[in-house]
Each structure stands twice: as structure tokens, then as C-alpha cells.
Image (cartoon, rainbow, N blue to C red):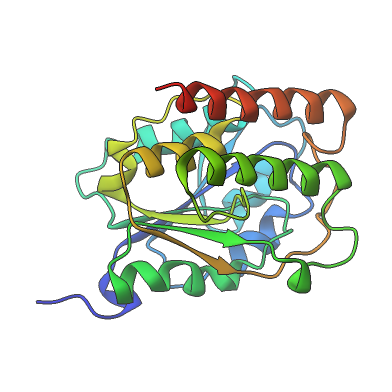
Length: 236
């Protein structure tokens, strides 16, 4: 039988979460019910993230090694051990800055057009004022400009809200453990010649303080990691 609608596809969501007790319930509750499993990866939280995520109905894993990439890889390892693997994996942050109900928009190009990879692009006209810091906006511009320059990419954002076919995700052999996860995925998608598209999504001020862009140290390390991945692949 040909799969033609969202309900025909097995979709799993991975949510990395570090001290997101105040937001995680809202994120989980607004994810469409067509999703077969919501996987929250507790990244060494010291608050009630685990309790709140479990109460909201998510599968909760724990990854004690701090790092966005570590958390995402933990979620992938869990999925790989299941007897039935999904068609699509969606990644979304646990801070409630994205609109979880827009998952339907994110997966639509995969379902309807058989694309491999979709980025939720935080376009200016749909962003709440102040939802992205100046360093985030500049970093996104620089990274995507370099990807266009080196690889003729059409990306405009490194948005964390993204969907990818599960088999294509495995082909990428993801390895970054920290800040470079999103750009690594996009660079490897380009190298593998995956079909991709950006979908404009709304974006609002997150609940709590960002662990990356909310600190000078986090911004610097993220910038170094992102540029490092781009220049590494430009030399191959």
C-alpha cells in the first residue's frame, strides 16, 4: 500500500532537554498525536525535567554527558534498538521556542513530495521580536552564506526543528557531540546529495535562558564548532 498521509508514516520525535522543567510539558502536549513516540533525552538536568516529561507521556532517556549532540545520539541509539524503526525522525528543542503543532508542516515535504530532509526555517517575518539573539542571527547568516559559497546550498537557517527520513539519517553517520550537531547534519546532507527544503516556521522567545546563545562562552564555542565543520567539509 502506498503511503499518502501523515497517519501512514511512523514518526518519532527526539527532544534533547537540559533543565527544561518549565517548558517540556507544553512542548510534548502540543506535538501532533500522529507521532508514534516522543523521546525526551534528559541531558543531566538538575530540575524536574524528567518528572514532567514522564507525566506528559514521553519516553525519557538519560544522557549524563552534557552536549546537544550527545543527547541526540542517545535518542538515535534508543530507536536503533527497537524492533520496528520509524519512517521519519523529527528533532525539536525542549524550550518551547518552536510551535510543536507545526510538525505537520515540517514532515509534509517528506510525505507528499518524497524529500529526504526538511529544516524549519526561522524566517524574520515569523519570528517574535527578541526570540533570537544578535549572535544567533549573525551566526546563522555566516554559516549558511559559507555553505552557499562552498557547496551551492540554499539553506538560510540552522534551525533545530527538523525532520529527516530515518534511513537517510543513518547514512549521515552523525558524530558531533555538542554545538555542531545541526550544521554537521546539513553539511553531510549536502555531501550525500539528499533532497531537502526549508519550511518557514514561527519562532518565539524560549522559556528560560539558552544554554548556548544565552552565554558568551556558549556563543563562542558554538561559533567555533560550526565554522570548524564547514571548513572541514570545504577541504574534502
